[in-house]
Length: 188
Image 1: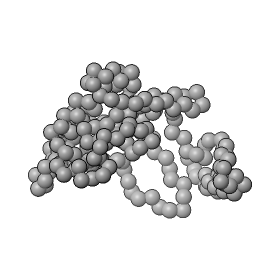
Image 2: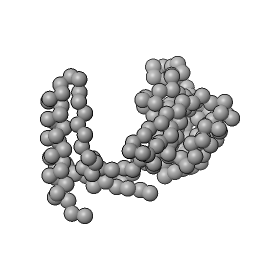
Image 3: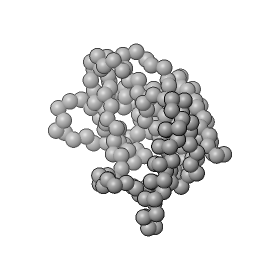
Image 4: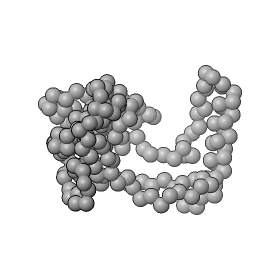
């Protein structure tokens, strides 16, 4: 199910339609293609012939993965050593139907992964995080279990900050009041 949330601000949004692709530098196009095909189910697609560098395009789930080969990728600090799998690190996430099956497949492939659980108002999301051959983190989850709700439709619960409780609460209340007033101007 695709859901669009109407923008509520004084700024006109860019005429975006959707996320088209994610582009990733890789040491070996072949190794990365095999990973995205065998682990995530992407399919290689035709790539423009005008490119003068080695790469590959893959597609599935309404998104593209563009691989760009850079054998000297070790020069980039972020991927020199295998990093700890940290759910709070940069990652790309895909929704899946069966997180248990994902874990079994990763175990059968001998891949390391980390799991996490997010709970909100009785809803539960199971997450599995792992790295591709170049150290980019991938998440598979059942994120659709938590509904996408505009902040204006949620009950407001100010969070107390240890650095300035009074000012932070005031600002949060002012922002919510402003947002609520703007919501009144929207016709459904």
